[in-house]
Amino acid sequence: MANSPGDVLAYFLALLFLFQCVQARTVTYDFNVTWVMANPDGLFEREVIGINGQWPLPPIEVDQGDRLIVNMYNGLGDKDTSIHFHGMFQNGTNGMDGPAMVTQCPIPPGSSFTYNFTIEQHGTYWYHCHTDGCYPDGYRQSLIVHDNSSYFYDMYDEEYTITMSDWYHKLVKDIMPSFISQSNPTGAEPIPQSFLFNDTLNSSLPVQPGKTYLLRLINISAFVAQYFYIEDHSFKIVEIDGVYTEPTEASMLYIAVAQRYTILVTMKNSTDQNYPIVTVVDSVLLDSIPSNLQLNYTNWLEYNASAAHPQADLKVSVCTDLTPFDDFNLVPYDRMPLLPDPDLTIDLTVYMKVLDNGADYSMFNNISYTKPKVPTLYTVLSAGDLATDATVYGDYTHTVVLEHNQVVQLVLNNGDTGSHPFHLHGHQFQVIDRAPGYGAHFYDYASGDPLPYDPSNHTTFPEYPARRDTFVLPPQGHFVIRFVADNPGVWFFHCHIDWHLAQGLGMLMIEAPSIIQERVTIPDGHYEVCKAAGVDFEGNAAGNAIDFLDLAGQNKQVGWLPAGFTARGIVAMVFSCASAFLGMAFISVYGASGIKSQKQKEPEMTEGNEASHEEL
Ligand SMILES: *[C@@H]1O[C@H](CO)[C@@H](O)[C@H](O)[C@H]1NC(C)=O
Ligand SMILES: *[C@@H]1O[C@H](CO)[C@@H](O)[C@H](O)[C@H]1NC(C)=O
Ligand SMILES: *[C@@H]1O[C@H](CO)[C@@H](O)[C@H](O)[C@H]1NC(C)=O
Ligand SMILES: *[C@@H]1O[C@H](CO)[C@@H](O)[C@H](O)[C@H]1NC(C)=O
Ligand SMILES: *[C@@H]1O[C@H](CO)[C@@H](O)[C@H](O)[C@H]1NC(C)=O
Ligand SMILES: *[C@@H]1O[C@H](CO)[C@@H](O)[C@H](O)[C@H]1NC(C)=O
Ligand SMILES: *[C@@H]1O[C@H](CO)[C@@H](O)[C@H](O)[C@H]1NC(C)=O
Ligand SMILES: *[C@@H]1O[C@H](CO)[C@@H](O)[C@H](O)[C@H]1NC(C)=O
Ligand SMILES: *[C@@H]1O[C@H](CO)[C@@H](O)[C@H](O)[C@H]1NC(C)=O
Ligand SMILES: *[C@@H]1O[C@H](CO)[C@@H](O)[C@H](O)[C@H]1NC(C)=O
Ligand SMILES: *[C@@H]1O[C@H](CO)[C@@H](O)[C@H](O)[C@H]1NC(C)=O
Ligand SMILES: *[C@@H]1O[C@H](CO)[C@@H](O)[C@H](O)[C@H]1NC(C)=O
Ligand SMILES: [Cu+2]
Image 1: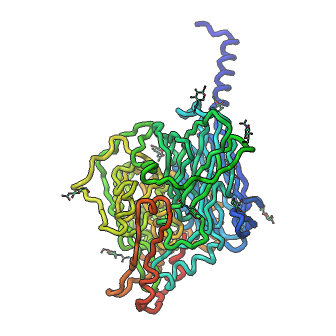
Image 2: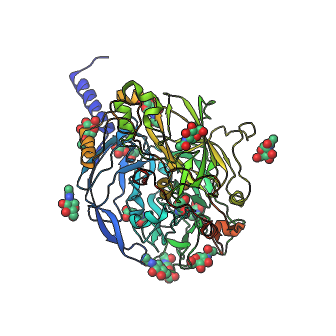
Image 3: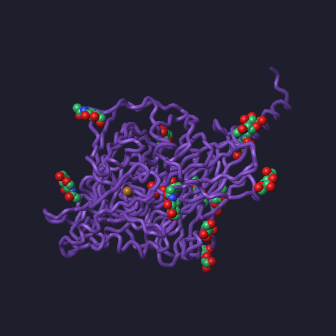
């Protein structure tokens, strides 16, 4: 074939065109983070964490393959901060993951920090502050990675993103001291004052008859899970936590903190009526229910702005009429098969225990996560050959060192009567076993016997297990997940109820420390932030950069109560099918009244505890 100069030019231009088409964009956001005033529930105006003077915060939107740059300036004046991009793998960019004292220093007031990474994923995510319990103050919003090559791209006409959250009238700094304290030995979680729908209430989504909408639902709560349904409309689930699923019909969802569901909803052809979008709070999670707390909320699919906007008909019984869809059964669209038998199994049990100071803490096994003095990633980078020795990360960060590409199985048993949404940074994991299942009996185990995982007696693992990045551990039940350690980095595994994280319900997995040392570089600006914050960025968990095996001076968890003290009394739990799922006429009373009469040991802080066991 003869190549004329014209052909060559055309070929060259075509190449150039192709190159430009596939060349990813860089999407830059400048965030000036300051306090602003907001009143999203119409009940109370309060200070919230705003960006560029605004709240609700700006959603981040990118296309798959884009580079995202977020230049963040901390203008809060009185609070450290950082951003975690929830669900992002940060493959090769571990230093951009965001949790303070894990992969970076907390960003003090007056400092700036640049997050800079590429996004080779798609779907529905969110970003939130990951320092000292700061996202309940409003620092959280959606992060959408568009993908016009998704299998459902031509199955809808328009898309909407909706966040759902709980909302407190008090600032975290005014809640936290009394939450983790001797006066709250049962660890009763703070009760939200309301539950927001896309950061407001009473909203209408304008829709057109016959069209199909893609709804991205994101639970950005700090604590409470909710049921979601639309009256007279069913839908198809197409994505959970960034993983496309086989289209799966459902009519009700249970969305726990940090979980995302993307659904396709096809509208009716008539325009005479508007339909309630109903969210019902899972009140089982609340230790007490104030009489003025609204537990069910109506928003609308608005077909006709001038027609009535009826309140939800809550006479339906969730148990008999609707059952929340069980995410365990969702098959990923890519049909990734069950991972092979694990190279490493990590066994964990969740406990809530009163420690020596009379306050309630959460722990995996006997370790309540306590911040190290040097961010753990920076310990990896400064420890040389000792980085593979878990000793250098200290006794209270609960660090497990993983080898590159190991198949890891994590068995999580719940020694607690509450449910907990667990999140693993840097991965989507396969959920291969879980008990009990959703449904009427989900909460039965809260009052009955625990149901730990029995490796010699379990149901057959799914052939194509559901994958996601956040999963709910049922009360006194268990779940078992598998993932491949193919993402060298320091990854936090923790409960996403911010109050429980503050109580220590977290641990670290360090994948392939020597590959981290080869691949991960930290921009100088990140170390400048450490200097401004007065935090060491070299050395072991105790800040010792000379002898990495000497942990003298490390932050320690609070000491154990002497034997004989009851950790947590459960006085009464009244469950019924309807109440568990609809929160009607239902109260569960955790230990508070029971334990108050017991003699508590006087608080006795061992050195460093109060300062070190801070919330994240
Ligand atoms: C951030 O916003 C505050 C308040 O509007 C302003 O005073 C400050 O100069 C801004 N800082 C930056 C770095 O943009
Ligand atoms: C929502 O509607 C309820 C009842 O219709 C009303 O009492 C409340 O003030 C509204 N809230 C907001 C934030 O619009
Ligand atoms: C972001 O990272 C890329 C790759 O390391 C680098 O080329 C670029 O200069 C960085 N941009 C900013 C604003 O830091
Ligand atoms: C898909 O998205 C890319 C990047 O935004 C764009 O260049 C391309 O035109 C889009 N394709 C379609 C079919 O919309
Ligand atoms: C939800 O709120 C965000 C941020 O304010 C906004 O961009 C988005 O359009 C809202 N979604 C709907 C469905 O109104
Ligand atoms: C979000 O998750 C929290 C915690 O699990 C839960 O209480 C709340 O009801 C959920 N919200 C929705 C709308 O699902
Ligand atoms: C709406 O009308 C279209 C076209 O007539 C039909 O295909 C579709 O099934 C109807 N949808 C519903 C929900 O009735
Ligand atoms: C819905 O909320 C209202 C107000 O909080 C309450 O009176 C009612 O009992 C609730 N209904 C259900 C079914 O939860
Ligand atoms: C919208 O609702 C009003 C009031 O019910 C009704 O009069 C009108 O015909 C409806 N419009 C359409 C387009 O259905
Ligand atoms: C937890 O238990 C293990 C084994 O019994 C023990 O070696 C370790 O020191 C304990 N950790 C704490 C924090 O008490
Ligand atoms: C195996 O598990 C099932 C279901 O949890 C239980 O009913 C059965 O008693 C168990 N069998 C043994 C031998 O533990
Ligand atoms: C990280 O990237 C490597 C290739 O560099 C790939 O093999 C691995 O699957 C990726 N891991 C994740 C979690 O994205
Ligand atoms: Cu929890």
